[in-house]
Amino acid sequence: MRIIKRALIADDHSLYRRGLALLLKDQLGYREVVEAATFEAALSAFDATPDLELALFDLVMPGMQGPASLTPVRLRHPNVKIAIVAASEAKSDVLAAIAAGLSGFIPKSLPNQQFIDALEFVRAGGIFVPGLMKVLEPDVPVISDDPSSQRLTGRNTANKPAQSLTPRQNEVLDCIRAGMSNRQIAEKLEISVGTVKFHVAALLTALNVKNRIQLATSAS
Image (cartoon, rainbow, N blue to C red; front, side):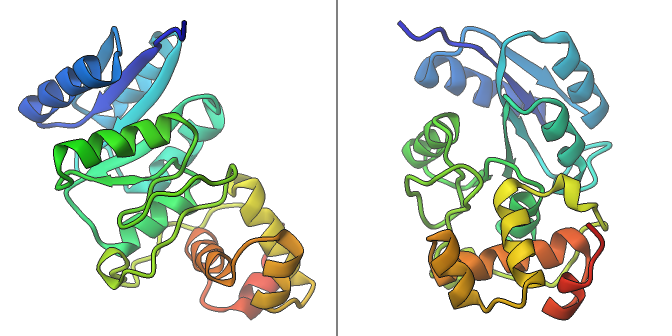
């Protein structure tokens, strides 16, 4: 029988935290859900909570500076599934979450069952992106051709070193540095051209550069 581990909710709205905590316990079987109202409190909870399996972060709360804030947390706790749960559905925020190597971006506006399905998907090792769920290999984001799930405002996250990228993003970056086209990268890595384009966009965001030439010459 599968041992249910603990979950963490970081959100400054107490009513939403309590409601989500009940959902995690009643629908996903978590025995304990730790709540935090600030980013700093959430970091403390990470260190104080053994067997933490799932961590859900709101984008707008004290101390939170966007999805990039969670990259050091992901690197320090690689076994914890970390996802954004937010009111925003802007593609820039979704893209920043994937660039940070998180397990996805779940809109608060999803109907209950879809929300539960998204959480189950993340817990099973998938990466959830609004508009589509699909079984995927580790570090390969799901992308959707639905324009409604890909609104882009052009806002960049802070510059980050290549060490904070996912393994797949580093592979794509190496291919770009070798002068390969998107189609050549797709064939080599056995992924779709659309997925390559998503990785390239995530790399531009993660490394805070404007084009492929700057990606190719970026520091390792």
